[in-house]
Image (cartoon, rainbow, N blue to C red):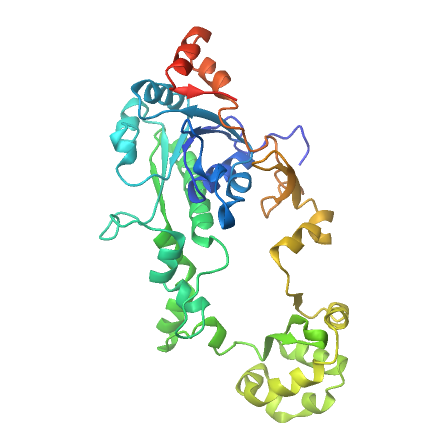
Amino acid sequence: MPESTPLPYAGIRVVEFTHMVMGPTCGMLLADLGAEVIKVEPIEGDNTRRLLGSGAGFFPTFNRNKKSIALDLKKPEGVEAALRLIATADIVSENFKPGTMKKLGLDYDSLQKLNPRLIYVSHKGFLPGPYDHRTALDEVVQMMGGLAYMTGRAGDPLRAGTSVNDIMGGMFGAIGAMAALRQRELTGKGCEVQSALFENNIFLVAQHMMQFAATGKAADPMPSRISAWGVYDVFTVKDGEQIFLAAVSDKQWGIFCKAFGLEEMLADPRLKTNNDRVMAREWMMPILRSHLAEHSAAELSAVFEKNELPFAPITRPQDLFDDPHLNATGGLAPIRMNDGSESKVPLMPFTLGGERPGIRLQPPLLGEHTDALLKDVGYSDAEIAALKSHDVTRST
C-alpha cells in the first residue's frame, strides 16, 4: 500500500481497558488498520509485561501500534481522566470480569448516555446466559466446548497448541466493532458489541457438530478420525525425521505413485479412487511408510514440491524466525521486547494493496503517552503534576 494511502481506520480513536490476550488482540487489529488505540493501564502496568513461561511474549505480540496511559481507576481522579479520554473516542474496548466496568461507571449503559455514538466492545467468557457468571479461560472453553476432545486422542483431551479462542475472540470483537462503525454510518448511533470465548469455541467445532447432523455418526477425535483422504499423514523417515505428506485426489495419487515407483499400487483396483484408498488405509499405509522410510525429509520435500504435491516439514515455532518465505514476503517485522531487546513478530496474515499492515508504533512503555494524552483532553501541566503526586497517573 503506498504511504500516501491512508489506512482504513485512520481517524478512529479506541480507548481500551484490556489485558492478557483477547482484548489486546482486538485493539491490535484495529491499530494495525490505522486506528489510534489508547491502552489504559494500571499504575503498576499491564500484568502481561511481567509474565513468565508461555505468557512471556504476550505483551509485545498483542500491543503494537498502541499508546499507553497509566491511570489508577480505583481513585475518582483516575476515572475522571478515563472519562475525558472516552469522550473523545469512537470505540471503547474492555475484557474485565462482568460487573467490573459497571462498578467504575464505565459500562456501556453509563457511557452511551453521555455519547449515543459510542461503540462499546466487551470481550467475555460467555455471552449472556446461564454460564455468564463463570470464570472462563481459553483452556476452560476448549474442554467444555469439544475442542480439547477433538484435539487429543480418545480418553486424553488436549488443549490446542495456542490461545485459539482468545485470539479469535479478539478478532471477532474487532469484526463486530467494524460492523458497528458501518452501522453507525447508517443510523448515527453506536451500539454494544459482545464477543465471547465459549461461543467462539463453538464456532470452531461447528464442522464436527454438523458432521453428526449430516451423518448421524459422532466425530472421532482428530488423531483417531477416519481421514477424508487416502494419504494424509505424518511419516517418520530417514534418521528419525518426520514430514507430513498428502495425496488428496486421484490425480495426486497417480503423480505420487509414479514419482516413487509405485506403479503396482497405482494399478491395483482396490486403490482406484480416494474413497477406496480411505477404506484400504489399514494395509495400504504400512506399505507406503516402509517404501518412504529410507528417504530423507529433504529428498521427499524436493520430490513433492517438484510435483506440486502437498507436504510440510514438522516445524517448531522458534524455527519460523528464519523461515525464508516469511522473511522474503515481509511477514515478520522488528519488535521491541519487554526488556528492551529487539526481536521479530508476525504481522497480520493479509495484505492491503499488496502490503502487510505494518508497525507504526512499538509496544508502548508503561505510561509512555500519559502526558501527551492528558494534555490532549485538557489537563494543564500543573494538573498532570498533581495527578502524579497523588499516584493517580505516571509517565515513562
